[in-house]
Length: 185
Image (tube, rainbow, N blue to C red; front, side, top):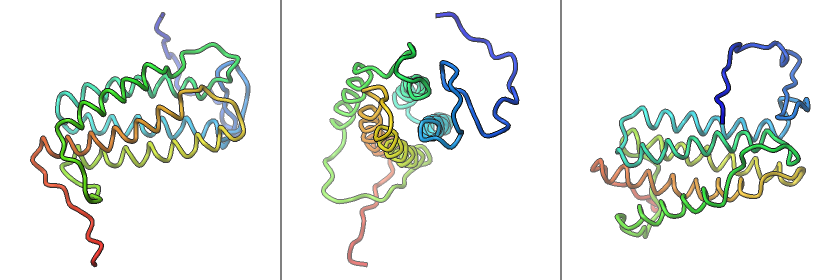
């Protein structure tokens, strides 16, 4: 696939609150479709912050793969179903599941709820998980109104699970002891 070169950052076409979907359809920047891929874009940016924090090499490498998937998801969400673009694949979902299973092998099963915290990478992974859950909720709203790619919601659901597990692994590998919720307070 040929690389697209961005030669101009501003186009002035969005100055009235509209933007173009892939295929040219103009929609409000406040539409659920645009809001959904905006949350996915935010999640991608948070994962970029995670990578900048010097996380474990294996986790950092996996994040690059996830960021690529999220970019494809953004294109998927920005494209009505009759437009041919790369879409989130079932294989990408399976890759997340495999990563969850692999990371869980090195963690003790949870018997209590933990507070989102840890070293900087682990804390940002917990933050990324919350952004992923928000994107997931937004996509559910979008699906109630429009048809979208069949794997988008499933991917986000698995991704938030993976980010939780990755946060725990990052903290464990960094020798950070998890803090359990104290329901007696």
